[in-house]
Length: 226
Image (tube, rainbow, N blue to C red):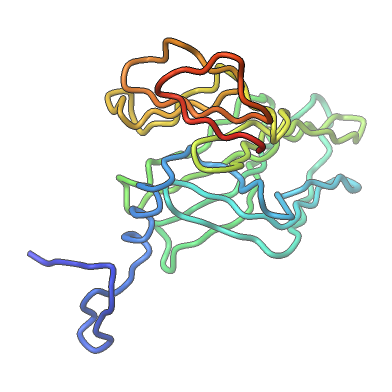
């Protein structure tokens, strides 16, 4: 049986070698957020429509403790359909099965349906898995017109994620708790602008606001002026 410490290692024997899998487990333990695009970055995989195609700009994403970044635009061309509207999903891919492991922006083949499934392995458990994080759903019409739906999920801070069609700084009282599974109630964290007097058992409420609310409750962490 071997032991590994995240500390000073031995370059000759490889003892305590820092490996991506171990680092990802540590990051995933601290963050415990759903996979998404890092919203605090200047670039967040912006999309530009061009003749018969799209260009996806730079950005950074996270999935299960793994971080991937693209620092240059990536162009994709489509074939204009002759008989009916077609669809393609744009995504970023974390591929742990490749050697070396890879991160890339990709698109699915054109399809007659908008329901396009992506491979989304749990990278915390499947060490050779693949996770495909959706960015956009592209619609290619027979007229040559190309449109898109923004389906990015943005990660603004630890314990809070929002869909890109919501304001990055608009917090809701009914935000889904961030937890790796429902049985770990002690890890549940709600972010809200409306503190409640009866949070679920074992739940910590995190309140973001610009002023102290009129009524204050136990089990609520108040962050004022954010």
